Image (tube, rainbow, N blue to C red; front, side, top):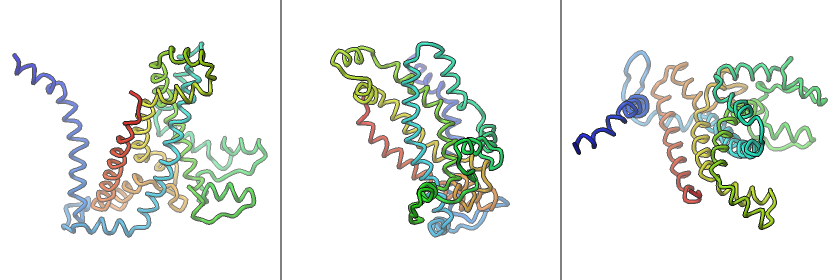
Length: 310
C-alpha cells in the first residue's frame, strides 16, 4: 500500500515529464552535439570541434543581432512591469464594468501574434497608415516606421538640431516599432497578473495608512510596490525569457531583419542560419550560447528573490 502511494505522484507527473524530455531536454542535447559538426540538413557532417563557436565570435552579424536583442529586452522588460502595474491599480479602483475592461486588456494576449503583426504592419504603413495619419494631425512629417535604420536618439536629437555620435544613436526606429508592438502584446497578460496580486493585499494596510495621513502617492510606493514584489519578480523573470525569444514580429513585419539588419534579433538569426543557409551546426552553436546566457541571467535574477516580500 505504501509503495503504491509513493508511485502514484510520479504516474501523474509522467505525461508532463515525457513532454519536457522530448521537447526541451532532447533538443538542447542534440543542439550541443550538432554544434561540434559541420552539420547540413542533407546529412551528417565532419567533426570540427569548436570551429563554429570561433566563427561565431568573429561574426559581426551575430554581435549585431545580440545588440538588437539587448535593446529590445532593455525597453520591453521595464515597460512590461511599469505600465501593467499602473493599469492594474486603475482597474482595481473602478467599481463598474470590471470584467469588460479586463477582457479588453487581455484580448491582445489571446489573439494570434500573426494576425496582430499583420495589423500593426498596416498601422505602420508609410502611406495611409494610422501612425503617420496621427502624426499628420499633429502637424509632423510621416516616418518610415519599419524602414528607418537611424537610431531613435539620433532622430530625436536631430529634430532638435543637435548632432550626437553614431554609437549613441540607440535602437533604430524600425526596432522601436517592433518594441512598441511587443510591449502592447504583453500588456494585458501582465496587467491581469498584477490585478490578481493587488487583490491579495489586505485593505487593512491601506486603512492604517490613511489613518496615519499617508496620501495615495505614498500608499502606492510604500505599500503597493513592496507588497506586489512577488508578482513583479514573476513578471520580470518571465518577460526577460520571453523577450529573448522574440521572433514572429521580425519574421512577419520586416524584410529579413532589415533595414540594414537593425531589427534582426538573435532568434531570427538562428532561424536564418539554420533554415535559409542550412548551416545547422552554426545555428546550434548560436542557440546554445543563447541558452547558456539566458540560463545565467535567470540564475542571477533568482538571487534578487531575497528582496521579495512573500
